[in-house]
Image (cartoon, rainbow, N blue to C red; front, side):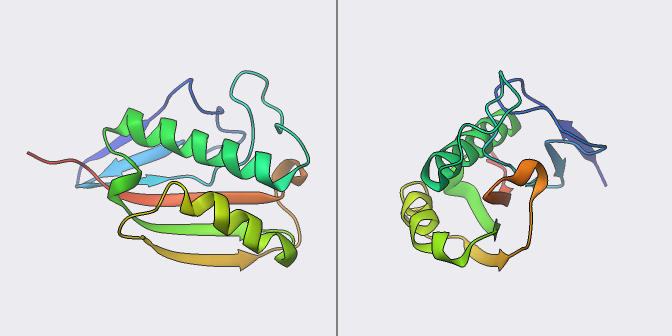
Length: 129
């Protein structure tokens, strides 16, 4: 089994003992991303829409660094602290996963790191020749 660490300055640095993503075989597995701006290390705001947009941007940067894209995402897991935010998250999410939607789980949790409102992780296939 091959295993390669994916790291990019275009997404927030890990805030613990984990990698932004790992490539294993023909898939990339991202760590959960928060709405943290890469240059400040802080949440972009306390607004769910802005946090989801930043989460998606962070995921996009990691996927790009790994050599893949949103079009190759096969599974996501979304963590939300407030069930009332689901429709807002869903609307923003749909803007980036508009074709063959990946499988998805959404989990409601009591709290996320840095008191974030949303966290999303993804599994994507790599572009192969």
